[in-house]
Image (cartoon, rainbow, N blue to C red; front, side, top):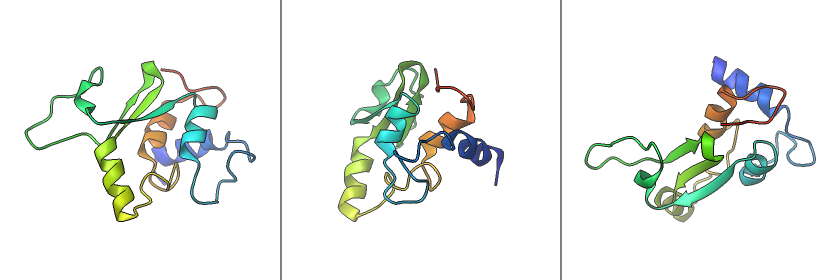
Length: 117
């Protein structure tokens, strides 16, 4: 396990069992983001409008952004709608099963306090 995953595991240990038991799928990603991390997950169609969004080459697009100072995670709405059509569990796998925004957020979060930007 790399240091980011170890750190994410430490932070996610703060998730109360009434919110998520650490095993049951689908993971209540939005509830965890809100209740534990104070983050709002937004489906956004124009990811390049995010404050500080990087310049991308033609044909590239962002799948998600952590906007820590705003307390938001922006998820590309087109990715979300196409994964839902395909039946993908990409958004539902959550913090330990591929939830990149959680891992990134957890890598910079204090273990014993709320995540702040």
